[in-house]
Length: 296
Length: 306
Image (tube, rainbow over all chains, first blue to last red; front, side, top):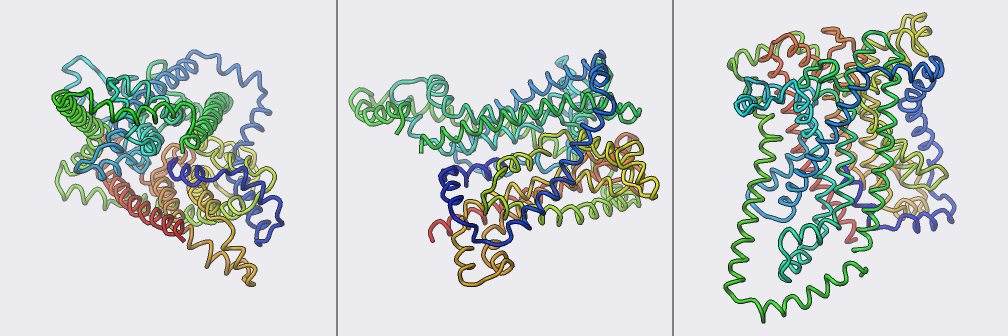
């Protein structure tokens, strides 16, 4: 997803083109109709629903809304959601870096198949992923059985939530790092190596500075996705209040109990967190683009 | 060339020379051997990571679905409730996909071909649904159309049902899928430039001929790819739909919700049988993705040459 967005942009200095275009009168027809249709659909399907939250918050009163956040169960769910998403994003970034390195730098049988498979978590419905991972890590499951032998419980613990979120976040990490690695010439690493740098030195002093923006972007995307993820997590989490109840599930529970104020308050916290991350991702992509243009 | 890259370039130039003079062949050979070992180790590690993360869950779905034999598998996917869920999922895709395509093309034309004030704000707005948790998305529609929602009383007076009914499922799916086509089409319409369209305009062509004969052929693979992503998400959406559907069997149950119900009733084999259908759909869409990616890349390359 990100790859396709990045490629056409990078080659063209958008600002310069924009300026030259603005100076010319509009030659092409259909601008008003296309913009009108775009705004109408965005308005009805995106802005209207989002503004309903504001209207609702206004009706309930902001102080009362925030009062619902001062609740042990709510705070526990937020802590759990934040910590598991953070850990999962770190793990997804590390494994994503490894996989994107191997996919861009080495040629081996089955490489293209693996490359195509990276997007599986994008394509697989979350409830399918949820029941599959639960069965895999359950105490009687293929992996759960072996892990239980080592004294590690995954299913129905916070670790299970992390496992589900790594699955969900993994393609975000790979698909942001991969194009940047592909653009870096292998000669750079080879020359560092031939000058006597150890592989670790080459990685930390030559490669990492170049791919850092992409790595952080992928991390932030996986983190943002993890904060709101529901389908793949609810099956494996166990959903015990105070222990394994994530924030999106608590929103669901509050809605089912008609506690709309509580649901709205918790949703607002999640929304603000994801908007902050969206902003950060935009800034990171700007940084990555500047880095890419400088190198080109 | 920039400041940080320059030393590396110099390093590269001198690197070749220094290797010839100072490196003994033995050192070179041992370094080659260690490089091969690193390479092999990393490839193996990547395969293990992907096998563990992605292939094992897929294998579990297939294994559990066929655990009780082919007959039980076929019974599960032919049960009336599964068929009803399939029909609803197909209906949801049939409604959301055209809206997504229409929206993506309109947004692509307005944003990709024109500059106007507020353009970058609109681009950010388009991505907003991706930043919203699916559960929150569902909640927003309950706040709008639920019994106590903004339009709830009006809908109730007119005997219209949105939440816990099919329209709610469609609306929630539209919200989560809306950016997919637009974000594939906009960058391509923008990077193709306006020259071809303007030439057609000067030659006297109206909007529709320009659009169908000049613009659309340039973006058709991106359009198909975005539609594929939107369709996959529409088929699989769970969180948002879960909030608004009410889980009424045979009425508002999509396939992912049907899987949840079966699983929570400990009907594991039927749950995985239905899940295997959705997994098959996912694998097919991955294959199509690879195909479209290739088409799109060769399309861009051709345009680049001309």
